[in-house]
Image (cartoon, rainbow, N blue to C red):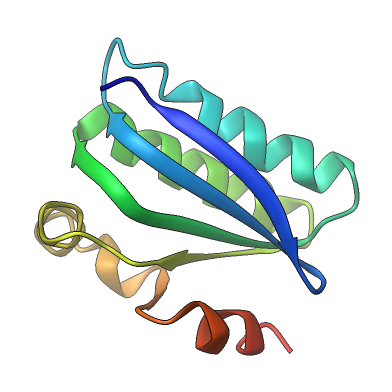
Length: 114
């Protein structure tokens, strides 16, 4: 399954719904591009919804970190929503689970930006 993104607004938070595989050859750089695009548009609060991500590899992790750094350098914040077991396991193994704020509920995640 190829990587697909859909961006929507939840108040002043840009929610990027990600589905598919975040992996080498699956176009994972589109996540970084989407986050940079949001900061260019003035959206500094970004919520990545990963509930439909079936797989993530080291390249995908690199994209998440690069996006996190890019948004932070622009004065923004990136938070994660709806991690699947695989994505959560990878983030725990890489110790990135402590870097990102992670939520299971979109409403709670959106409110956390206030």
